[in-house]
Image (cartoon, rainbow, N blue to C red; front, side, top):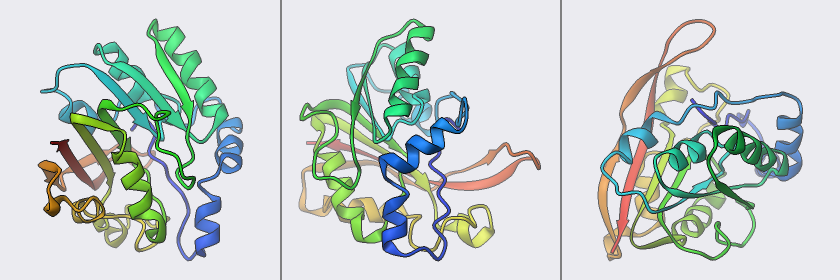
Length: 224
């Protein structure tokens, strides 16, 4: 996968969980390796954007830019947002090497700002951003606020089943979530969103020990 945000959250306090979402944490993580993620786009993004007409796109918690660069290659005018300045520097370098343009912006999931610098986008995608339960609704509401009328929000995450199966033992209970968590946070029953996808598909993920069978949470919403 391109940039699954693996954190060792099990048995951590709320303060410790929040600390692992900071710029300091991720700058140190990225500075410790030439490349943390594969650079390939996430499978669910490729699947869920296949029927969309390219427009403006925002990749939230973009990591080193695998998704953002792929979107730019498909014709999307792409912005990538992340808390880590090191990561955003790599996005710019990788985009230049790929011959595409990706705008980069800083964004703190635990801050107060909407990602994307106040602009709105035809597609806002966020992949494997797992935040404390206490912060979940606020974080995802701010992400959703960047979606333009008629635009889509695509959320991909690890499903809680992966903790039970042992696939995500480092993720403590409660950090992984089902589609219903996103729907509830955005109060989709009140109107304002059309639910296009709310699914929990499985896939095989390559690991040094062989393929690992995992389950994803996938939600795609269209703002009315």
